[in-house]
Amino acid sequence: MTRLLVRDLAQVVSPAGTGAPLRGNALGQADVLEDGYVLCEDTKIVAVGRTRDLAPLAGSDVEEIDGRGLCVLPGLVDCHTHACFAGDRVDEFARRAAGATYEELHAAGGGILSTVRATRAVGEQALVDGVERHAQWMRSAGTTTFEAKSGYGLDRETELAQLRAVKAAGGVATWLGAHAVPPEYEDGDAYLDFALAEVLPEAATIAEAADVFVERGAFDAAQARRYLDACRGAGLVLRLHGDQFSEQGAISLAIKLGARSVDHLEATGAAGISALAASEVTGVLLPASALFLGRQMPPARALIDAGAAVALATDFNPGSAFCESLPLVCSLAATQLKLAPEEALAACTINAAHVLGRAAQKGRIAPGYDADLVLLDAPDWRYLAYHLGHDHVARVVRGGELR
Ligand code: NIG
Ligand code: FE
Image (cartoon, rainbow, N blue to C red; front, side):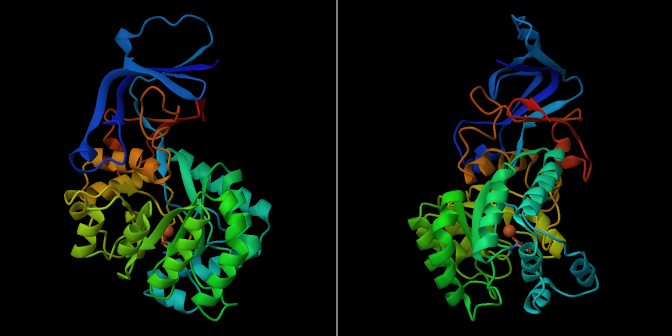
């Protein structure tokens, strides 16, 4: 047995409550314990309390971390990334800076399809190396659990290689088989004929969820329904990219099909807000993507006030959000989305863990939960959102091991 004791911490902080996903008032509650400790045994948290109440531990197998001046939070959970890709889009970034829009670049064969060309051109080992490198960036920013999607292959070999690479790098794999229509196919229906017959059966043995981009120029609601119905039949959890640029019916489809989440929501109007709030579907907010593309922010406050369950994620990808930092996303949540720091914390820990089907293991500091912790070099945990763009992560513990 390996034991790890983090003691004399300025604050031990965890989203309050026991259930998930949190919504309404519960979303804004955090348990804050001053002068605390966290004791882990092997891969689990076994005790949390005040350091002054800590009885001497028998045995000499305890590794101790001096937590003075540090705050500890649950390891952050990034429930929406596109971390498996090759190449970059720095030239497009420069063109966008000079005035070109994301949709114009996409319509001209750039955008997602330029990353598809780059991703198809490298082998599986290069994809694994890429996800590992990106996972290391995420870990440096406090992320201990990440999801990553395929969607830059759009052919059988590369889609499956992407999913295997995500798993090999320790991520939760989502099959984004309906991200864009690749140039070999006349239209979305012809591409879906291929993807559902040739890729889904094997993708469903690697991925946990399926995702679809519902948008003009990508897939419409009828095509998304066909794709998601088939994916549900193959045992996958359902997720959607919806209302990013325009409302195309993604929220009502998500509710009808019992999807786990609908992600983006920058263009969601009043009817979508009340429908989502009254449903079991979690809204995943991606403010770094809205910022990076210079678009309006999602109506986060209205969603939360109406009672919706929300999560926060980076959307890390080379085109619309080249940002792997959940602390930065928390700063955007506080300053742009008007979330309280407690709401932002719950949204990128326990509620994000719920989106990934891991709310019983991840996203809280409590006995029985996984020993995933992030130690912040700050006198108050709210520096997570307050100190804009700062690297506050002192140590990361993942599965009981110091990283
Ligand atoms: O979530 N909107 C669709 N997909 C990604 C962008 C992917 C890309 O630009 O490469 C997103 O923003
Ligand atoms: Fe995305």
